[in-house]
Image (tube, rainbow, N blue to C red):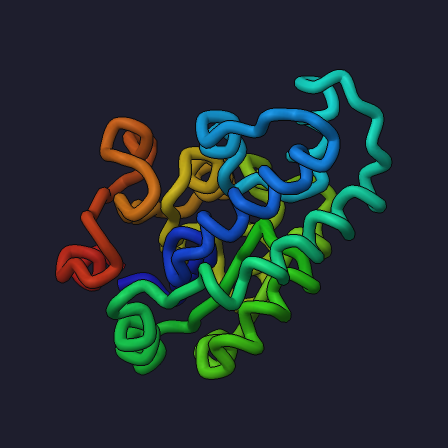
Length: 212
């Protein structure tokens, strides 16, 4: 049995992708650019800063990173209340695992975005010993830094941690950190998640509990 389980947030514990997609789509609509779901899916689990760098190249724009991210985070806040929900079984899973494991959260979202989540789901924050955001590392997923930092703060070795992810970039980050990965098919299908050690349908899957 592992000592720790580190969760991604978006697409794993909360269904927030629609809010993120709408925020980015509005951000680019204001600039006369068409932002598609295919473009969005390609950068799931990537920080807003890195996403903006990528899209500046895609669209040939020169939007300042800090300024653009602040605007995008404000747009996310506008959509959060009507488009965020906990996945069924999320709290039950965390409370069960908390009895036997150290729980951590490693999210590509920043502090401001995460605060919107905590306001809507205050009990969620209380389940974790450690919370690490993109603001605390220099590189976002698929770089392993965020998972290595969460692991260090939990007082565990990478080999003692299991990561629960939903996106290819997150899976790559966790594997590069030397951790076992359980992927949930709540955002992508099995083919996209093939880099994971274990793939389950949802966080309610009995196989997920058996894999940590």
